[in-house]
Image (cartoon, rainbow, N blue to C red; front, side):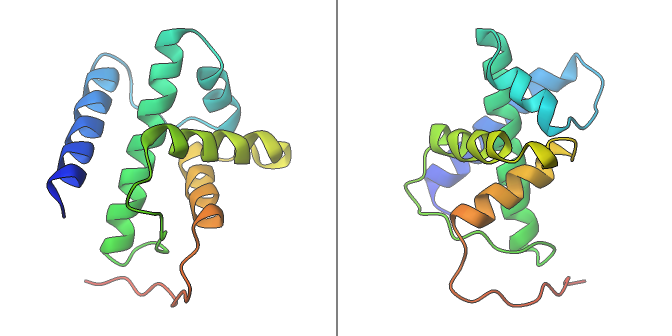
Length: 124
C-alpha cells in the first residue's frame, strides 16, 4: 500500500470515527444517504465520509477475499467515488431501501469491474 493510500485510509477512518463517536452506530439505506448527500454542508460531509468509509471497507474485504474486487484507477479521488455512488442510487429508486454500503459496493463494481472476476472464496 502506497503512502498516499495509507493517508487516505487513515483520514477516512479518522473522519468516520469523529462522526460516529457521538452518534449511535447504525446502517443507513440509500434513501437516507441521498438525503445526507443533498443536505446541509455538515450532512454532505457525513455523506462523503460514509461513502469513503464504505468504499475503504469494501476494498479491505476484497483484499481479504470476502468481496468481489473493484478495479478502480489509482488516481480516483473521493469526490468521484461520491459522484459514482450518488448517481447509481439516484438512478435506481427501486433499490434505495437497501443498505447503502451494499449499494455503494454495487455502484463501484459496476463502474470499475475487473477484467476477470473469480468466485469469491473467503480465506480463513
